[in-house]
Amino acid sequence: MSDRRLSRRQTTKLLLTATAFLVPTSRLKAASQPDNLEKITMHKSATCGCCGKWALRMREAGFVVEEIIEADMQAVKSRLGVSEKMQSCHTSEIAGYIVEGHVPAQAIKQLLQERPKVSGIAAPGMPSGSPGMEMGAPEVYTLYLFDAAGARPLGKWQGDKPA
Image (cartoon, rainbow, N blue to C red):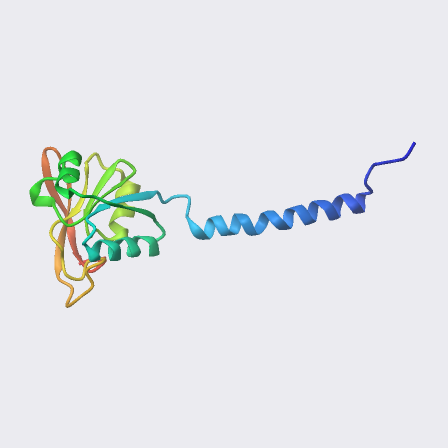
């Protein structure tokens, strides 16, 4: 009868080899998508270039962004309850919130951390210098929290930083 057990040395070598394959995989996952950030679903028209630039800024901030081309953006905004005063070019969804327009990543992360009881956050219009609109001198603009009852200012921003 032959002895099929592995020696301690063989067992150790086998475990070290198996572990070596697991370490890089876990490092790749951590580098590609932080566990604390969620996926952004962005609705945009096919002709809008600044929307793609905003999506790129969000990816650079660590978010995963799915871009959906919509034939009728007004229908999307209406379905999600974005009032005319809060509207911009693209409308996004993340973790049950609506993100309207060129909202900076820092503000989205703050929204997700604080979890206020609102429908979403908006950068109405297309403020010059906001993420995705980096052309010309950055203007100071207001971010708003909004819901069905209306909107309230969150604060002044310039570019992607609080003003």
